Length: 321
Length: 310
Image (cartoon, rainbow over all chains, first blue to last red; front, side, top):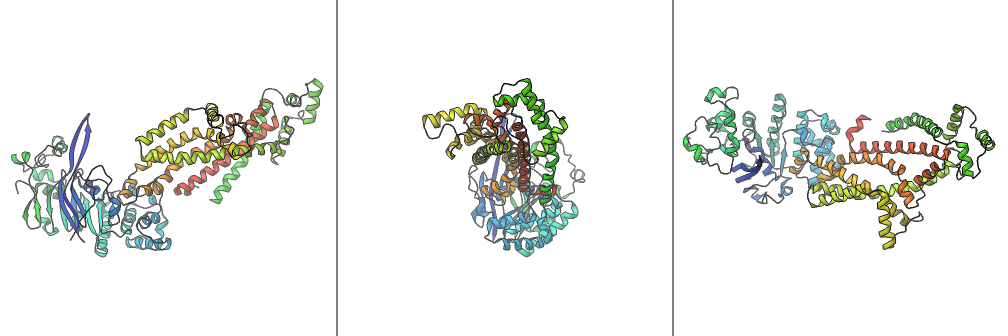
């Protein structure tokens, strides 16, 4: 059963530049779902719309078009203007953020940080909460005596653990992990990744892992969505198809960054990158990746490729596939 | 915490010592001399002989240092002498007047807090929308109205036209209302804007947005995460201003015939009532220091991180 279903979601932003207003699609016609107990990796470079999608799911903003369903109920009010129904779903959908130091009140101790959702969503007494906080600290690999430390006394990795404990506290069904590793150094990344993997196994929580790091995603994810320019480029419903992914953009992500210029023979230059906003403009009808794609054909500029099934559980949007 | 308070109280001693030198010295530097002032206050025309007699009586013929330590020795026992003008004990007069001024300043502070905090919060939550703009205009007008103008306006409306409140005096609680309002308007204007800006700065922090994403309601975000921190600049300024309220209540007190410190000291200065002026300076120094200490302690309560700095 799918826990979160994203149906043809579009999000339009207006940008003012030199006095003129441009509107562009940060998320354009994106559909996928997060199955119960599974982890979906959402991969793409910065600006591709993956964080916007995260904000839409937790209800910080409403989609311009389309619907996001949690257990078959819409999380958004459908209009940009109204306040989303975020409070109703917050207990079930919790988020872990990129920079843990930014994500906590610096005046709070670990106990107060983790206690907040307990106060917010449950009727526990002070003693029960205290006990639960200690439990949660153990669960994320911290010590009981850490509970009285202030946020800024923790290291980045420890504080990210505190944040995970806080997200666990409300007993959620889904974690939205927005780049949970990218502010940490590599050795700590591995620890947090292991922790997330353990939690997923033990507590039956589904993940949406938003990241630009394919390797990390591969380790944790059961399904993978690759986004570029607000649109889905390639999607696999089973991580075992990982090696078969063949969209030109995915290919490029897969090849490590220092090597890829040689690999596909295309030099990045300012002209190409500056197309990004243009390809997300409302009136652009081609493939968003056309400016940087080494395998582009004339059709790519004119027509947006439809998502097609290459084989069961493997979809891509590309004219040449 | 207790250690810190004791430390701060001990610092009082050298500060007060300095204040005493200033209080004693300044009065000596004031134009006119004490003997003449004393005689004039008693309504006796000063002659050479009388001045000489008074000088001997009051010990002003002794060396300055001796006079100072003599005065200091009494001052530590709160004995500032007898007022030239009223012939009453200075400390009793001062404490009597202080009670009235404290009442005035205290009630004004209550009004200030009760009005400016909600005003600030509304302004921040609805920033740059209608409520904020209304508050901005109100604050601007309030900050620009001097109390010697606002006071008579209020009297005109509430006492003379409507007849709700007494014009002046200090007999009952009803007498307290108009002077307190007159005094608080300026501070309401300042604090509501101060709190608004401080709130807005904190609301834009990332963790606040993230709290929304985690399902914390807007009200809880304001009360639990934003308000506490945002109160710190307000409390700090309030601490400084509370001293000013007590020391600067003169205009309001004269306007409403409120028998407080401000009125007392103005008449004392006019009469060159040296013992009274000296006592007043020392009293003010103590009040300022104690209020500042209280402010610092409240700040620590608001921001627990500062506990380590103690």
